[in-house]
Amino acid sequence: MTSVVQVTGLTKRYGELIAVNNLSFSVQKGVCFGLLGPNGAGKTSTLEMLEGLVKPTSGNIELFGQPVNKRTRQRIGIQFQHTALQDHLRVGEALNLFASFYRSPMAIDQLQQLCELDSIIDQDVKSLSGGQRQRVLLALALVNDPDLLFLDEPTIGLDPQARHNFWQLIEKIKQQGKTILLTTHYMDEAELLCDEVAIMDAGAFIAYGAPKKLLAEYFSGLVIELPSEGVALDALPAGSIQKADKIHIYCDDVEPVLTQLMANNMALSGMQIHQPSLEDLFLKLTGEGLRD
Ligand SMILES: Nc1ncnc2c1ncn2[C@@H]1O[C@H](COP(=O)(O)OP(=O)(O)OP(=O)(O)O)[C@@H](O)[C@H]1O
Image (tube, rainbow, N blue to C red; front, side, top):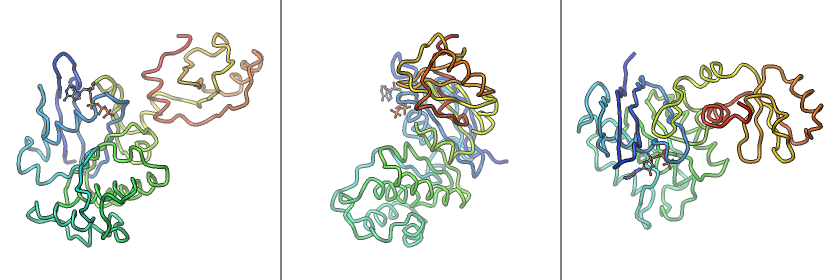
């Protein structure tokens, strides 16, 4: 298999702060790779080094088997977290403007169709909804028909419907065989879109692999989720985790745990039982066990 991205020992320091700490990973052709983690984990810094926008403090990056250079830049597309577009530019004008920066851009009508822009092509960019704006930014990132696409928190702030629409677009782009590297702090998004993920915390990877494989590695049963109000913490099974107003109990067998909870007179209203998700994995890896 061909590595589109190959990273070794990548580190970024901002003064005393180590924002990215000795990362090594590779992304194969056609794979959607997700960098996950909370605010400040180092996702954007990692992406910006791969994009050639920020210089690494140390480490090595190769894209398409070459160091980041002018040639590799022609083959990448970037959707930034924040992109300023002139207010009175129409969507079609923005696409044409960006296309003029490249030697062989994608045909505008193809781009328009791919990113579902027909109904807004003559609209001013300032009048777009959040979801429409993200679709336009995606189209701008695809204007040079890149082999490798970087998406930095592409659905941040979107309502659930707009997020779902955006995910469908990403699926279409994946089907074209493009390699995608995205950052997100929405674990459901990563689970749905990504073939491989790296969960970051404080600049380092704390887990790395295919979502299903990672979940199978860390969990063998189900998760019981309870509102934490009124819960006697010392009556919970070992390894339970509290996050915000919820208690998470990980168990192979639900029945004895429920029996134990009822024996301790705990109210089970508001309880949910579900399969472990990447959200649970993140919590398990970073959260503090209540009775460990
Ligand atoms: N130019 C900079 N100068 C100093 N510190 C920086 C700079 N850029 C980022 N940082 C710091 O580096 C750390 C990692 O930031 P980064 O933006 O890479 O994280 P992130 O995971 O992308 O977070 P977010 O989800 O909020 O974008 C943070 O503590 C941030 O404050």
